[in-house]
Image 1 (tube, rainbow, N blue to C red):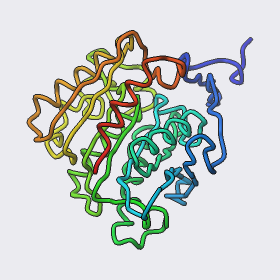
Image 2 (tube, one colour; image 1 turned 180 degrees about the vertical axis):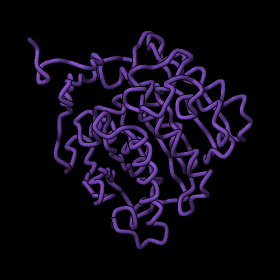
Image 3 (cartoon, rainbow, N blue to C red; image 1 turned 30 degrees about the vertical axis):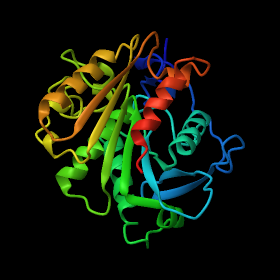
Image 4 (cartoon, rainbow, N blue to C red; image 1 turned 45 degrees about the vertical axis):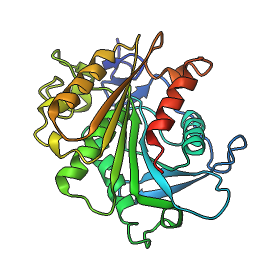
Length: 303
């Protein structure tokens, strides 16, 4: 007979399974690479604690600066992973953000957040917004992190994320506007292969967020029904989708909702043909990564 130690109560393939005794087992574990100097790009990185109480951290990426010292636009990044996997300290994100920081000449901060299901949603949303608030503490040049004080122009901020991280980036941009958050001026919102909702209940999301219907009547899963959408705080949005991604329809719906909303900024759409969800991480040899990276770099470059 199966015991509580072996009997599974919930199973979400590719993400995690939960045993009857409450134990969570992920289908894959995120790797960890130390901060330091990236040998290919010469980007320096360091880890900082942004919330001691919650033990939430971030990794900062500072590109090599040639010539006179100058402040750079700040890219605030939220990682994907279905709200339950991933971290800013994984090798894939170190490679991606080091490359992006170099090509776009930005300083990047990848905000960590507590993962579901151990920390039920909306914890990830709350941690993500807290990360931007922490960055705003540096607006007078006297914040807790010297790299941001010395190198980041908080008048030129970009929010970005892929998959669930794109969902979080959108949420933070809206909440920053709704709350009238000062100290940062968000200029761009980069939404890559976003994870939003549909009419049918998303059982996976419902498990992680018991207070949600898991459908498109939840403003976190469907920005079109968010009463605060028009308070979105940025000037331009780029939505990236992939042709074979099962979430493509949700990305297109988000693009359409933003176009129709009248929030006042510009919205652009970029589709990668022949590729699947977050292919630039899962298919690193794809010839389509270059064009996608160029599109992202062109969008986030702020002179």
